Image 1: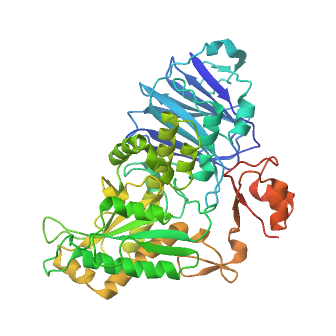
Image 2: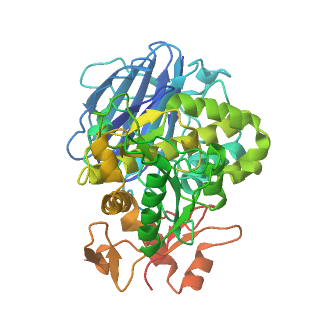
Image 3: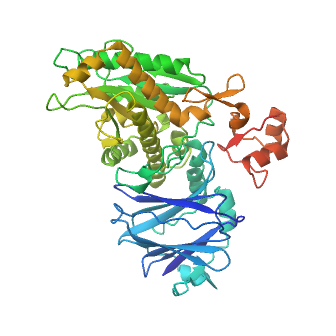
Length: 524
């Protein structure tokens, strides 16, 4: 049986690339496009295929990435060109999985439109006699002479596309009503619904650091300074690791944390909060809770490592493992009183919707994906910077089950600044000069990721390189989050600009605005 949905049409387009990010519980694929995708997709349950056809595609054909690590969900990917500037992509699915599709508009720091495909465990069985809606229209046969596939037509899909701001979903065994689906798609603005960062073996991890990553940050719509929570590991009754020269980890981490906080507080548009500013003990759960109460957008936990021998050396960065994510998600789903504490709009969306376990799980999944995505990408940049002043134990962020990193709504890193069990690294870690170098490296790594979205000062945009760019080379820093009752005409009057200027700046196709939508206000 076939289930297909026709997507909202768009102008001529170019597919820049297809990225793939395998994870323990799914594989996520992302098409990067120059403009809103014009496509149709079909789920063929008899051959276990997901077929996507893009219309009005121009330019060089994208390359197909490796699928290593995705075998549990995906067998192969085939790409072919069709007449009339069409491109077909076929995904041969593994047994017992289902696809879910949604599209994302460009964000403040990610210029591409994206079509995202998640393949998870589930059933492909179509329901409600969908074959009765067949119109007779068929997908065009490709150059490889595949058998044409009958397409089903859903009359309401165009209105749904507009109402849901681009959401397309295939989930036959779990139907979500329009109100609930609408709240899910609003997460693209409320919680920065981004693609999961690639695990260590994925092809996307090989991309240049200068290229926007899968989890590129979105700073707009939060108002106030960009708050970074800095956690100095251990403290008080917990000394942490102790070096052969009797240097305490808790002392080193606090010194580096203080240096980092000073750098952040000196940066326009940023503010540091510390989970501890003196030698006292803070419970692990309380550390992420402090970050949430202070509305932190990033949590950095500073540590020093200890190895089985005194020759092990080097710094590393850790993010939360998928296994720990699943464990924490199940706990959080059972603790409904905790939902409203979530940042970035996730808690608000759950709280304002009728109780729905699937919705809550979807939102938490998106939120955790975004947090781990940003954490991975920031971690790569921090490691690159630390590598300029210290040896690296691991060249890429590693995944681990660490309690301090478990917040679903805050990108979190644990930075092992070196091995205090190594006499040479212990000597360095106890040095105020070396501590300052490490703090600067961490700070610059964070700025490499977020810096170009921070406020301008004196007509220039501060860059993490220490150089400046003319204001004309920067993005406009004025952002507005749409609230209940606001309109395009009202925003134009409020900011002293024309409605057309706002439409053009944000590439709006109509004057309709969505609650939670982030609007860039052009210069008046």
